[in-house]
Figure 1 (cartoon, rainbow, N blue to C red):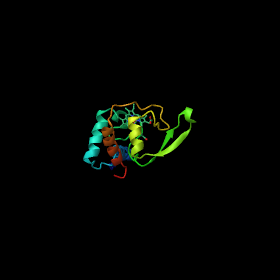
Figure 2: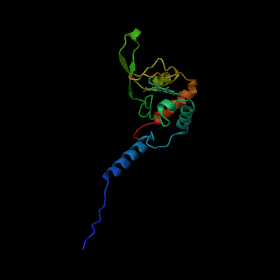
Figure 3: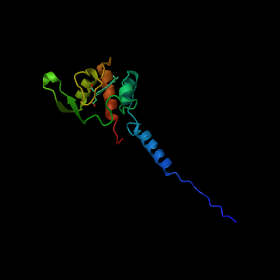
Length: 141
Ligand code: HEC
């Protein structure tokens, strides 16, 4: 008489993988899944229809370019051109900085990126909308 032993093959790694996938899914929602204001939604549409999303992500999560999440008000390290002494300088990403970063991408160059941001055809009003969007992209919702 043999006693059948039920072998339950537990695969803890599956749970691990599922957790990681879930975490990535949540993180890629950018602003923590929070609702955007009408203005910010317009800015998001502008960014997505002007090619910004291909480098900054369709939810501002970044990619080839820096993330927009928690960018507004943060400290950004910029490259100083060689003919101005080289090295880096730190600025606060206020509205003025963001506007310049969008409208004159060659002037403000974030340190650590080999890809240069191309110029774009955004008007100042459109750039303002994108800035409103960037400001609502915070990791704490
Ligand atoms: C080909 C890729 C590419 C595209 C397209 C692109 N960017 Fe960028 N962007 C970058 C890179 C790389 C940087 C960082 C280096 C630099 O500042 O040039 C950057 C920097 C920025 C910054 C400053 C980020 C920071 O951390 O301070 C803003 C704001 C920004 N981009 C907005 C835009 C907007 C708005 C558009 C669309 C109109 C756009 N970008 C399109 C690649 C891109």
